[in-house]
Amino acid sequence: MTIAPRLCTALARAWRALRRLAGDDAYERYLAHWHARHALPGSTPLGRRAFYRAEVERKWSGVSRCC
Image 1 (tube, rainbow, N blue to C red):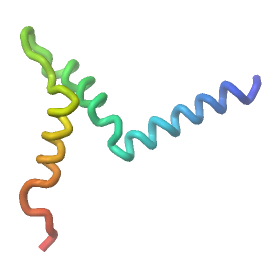
Image 2 (spheres, rainbow, N blue to C red; image 1 turned 60 degrees about the vertical axis):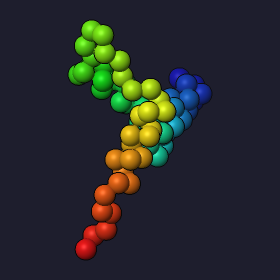
Image 3 (cartoon, one colour; image 1 turned 90 degrees about the vertical axis):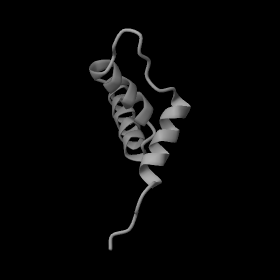
């Protein structure tokens, strides 16, 4: 077995892990969840821009201190 396919697989896994840690794949994960759990006839998921606006609002609204 050559090392090239194994290296490509390892790099792809590392890239996916990095994207997940950084939150870069949040919209794709949202879409997968929405289609699996919330898809009803006539309904549509949030667009990418609306999703990120809602996430920023959720993350930064309200009290954000420990004490």
